[in-house]
Length: 396
Ligand code: HEC
Ligand code: HEC
Ligand code: HEC
Ligand code: HEC
Ligand code: HEC
Ligand code: HEC
Image 1 (cartoon, protein in one colour):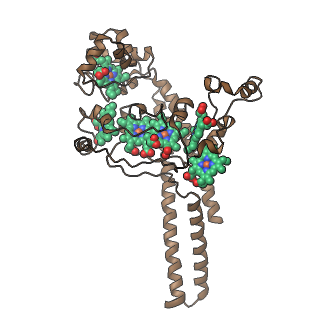
Image 2: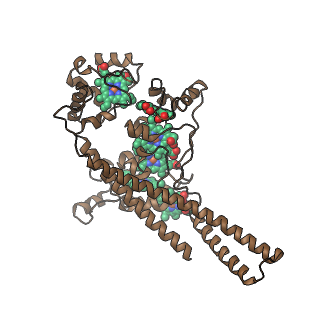
Image 3: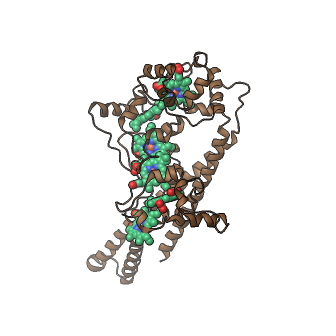
């Protein structure tokens, strides 16, 4: 049991580390994005995937001079939600939409003031004006440190799994060699050495098998190679494309879904070359279109068939950020499965996570809980309180 204990303890410490790491990261990032609000340059980051200021058309039109072409009110409503304006029949909006092959510009969750800041930034030709000072650069480094730590933990953990496989391999060899020597070749005369080697290796092998078996079928830290070098860091990170632009069913349905190539083409009909991979990877998108074949992405997150998990319930109703379950995807070149996807993982969140009880009409049916909440008998209502640990909720 010694090894088992060591491994278990390590697992415990590591999972605490990871939870802690992810939580800090989450906190730091919320602080970070808060301070970003006043930083117009950073807000413009999410437009760079599709627009330049003075360097020509990308997916959308060159924004140079747009502040002279359009008035501020129009710009604010267009940037916040262009489709709404287009659907309302606004003439200018419909015209620019048609001129751009009817590629929809995603809505942006920005306040009027944030858009005004961006407009100022555009009017300045992509430079900050005197009144648009940069804020809080030091938080940048904090995020970086937390991010590096989380990354390091994931790497260490993977190395550990690798090591365990090596230990298993070596032990099996040792076992075989001593059995063969004991029974046949008889090179070593002292038989007790054989016995000790056999017993310890058997012991260690069974320990490792036990540990592996209890997590059988789970693939924490699974990171398969994908058919196209698609980087979330490039898209969701550097170009700040909203997760929901590609995983567009995540708020409405059970599945987040993987975007079809037509979504890639919204941008890659224009963006034909990448900084790191040139045309090599992007051309696979054109091949897929030409051959009328979807890209065969390898699924990273896999729950067994007997488990029911619903994204809309968590993302939309529960308002849980993607980062809590998938790690900081926007920093990953390649997706890696961060949580363990065990039953314990789901339940431990359900025990502590509070639901948005007061603001959600659906929960009006729980009159008893509402009463207790009002009387101060409960500090808040957790998922467990509304039945989040009942077997039938998660199992078919
Ligand atoms: C996914 C690509 C994409 C992103 C990201 C994007 N846009 Fe656009 N944008 C477009 C397209 C395409 C159009 C052309 C109009 C249309 O098709 O709806 C457009 C049009 C515009 C226009 C109107 C231009 C004109 O000549 O009237 C403005 C202004 C604009 N975008 C600003 C922004 C700002 C600011 C951001 C970032 C907050 C942003 N866009 C992010 C694709 C994008
Ligand atoms: C409460 C945890 C949780 C949250 C929050 C969450 N996911 Fe997931 N996600 C999962 C689990 C569990 C799976 C595996 C589902 C399966 O195999 O059926 C998954 C699978 C996926 C997949 C693979 C395709 C699919 O639908 O199975 C994508 C893509 C994805 N999530 C994206 C997102 C995005 C984007 C967000 C945020 C908007 C998000 N997820 C929020 C837990 C979560
Ligand atoms: C909203 C616009 C947008 C969408 C949608 C989009 N991309 Fe991109 N993609 C970009 C931009 C911008 C770059 C960065 C080009 C560069 O490196 O300068 C890029 C780069 C790439 C690269 C090259 C990365 C490098 O650095 O070499 C690949 C490969 C790629 N995208 C694949 C895809 C695939 C596959 C999809 C669909 C699942 C997709 N993209 C969807 C905007 C987009
Ligand atoms: C430009 C489109 C695009 C954007 C933006 C995007 N994704 Fe993805 N996502 C993909 C594609 C394509 C895949 C499949 C390839 C892969 O796994 O890398 C994928 C895969 C995933 C997976 C793994 C699904 C699985 O089980 O195989 C998760 C989790 C995920 N995305 C979460 C996110 C989150 C969170 C964000 C926002 C921070 C985001 N994505 C933004 C296109 C996108
Ligand atoms: C990070 C926290 C978190 C994790 C991890 C998580 N959930 Fe949840 N889950 C929630 C929240 C919050 C709700 C309540 C949403 C609402 O308000 O209805 C919920 C609700 C549910 C419900 C509906 C319960 C009910 O009473 O209607 C099911 C089913 C469910 N989750 C399944 C899962 C499964 C399966 C997993 C693991 C694969 C999982 N959840 C992981 C936070 C989480
Ligand atoms: C919040 C969601 C959730 C609830 C509630 C839940 N389970 Fe599970 N259960 C899971 C997930 C996720 C797995 C898959 C774990 C894995 O693959 O390791 C699982 C796996 C299992 C397994 C397969 C054994 C294993 O570890 O893979 C059994 C048996 C099981 N659950 C029974 C139950 C029973 C009995 C209850 C009620 C007391 C229950 N579950 C409640 C999410 C849940």
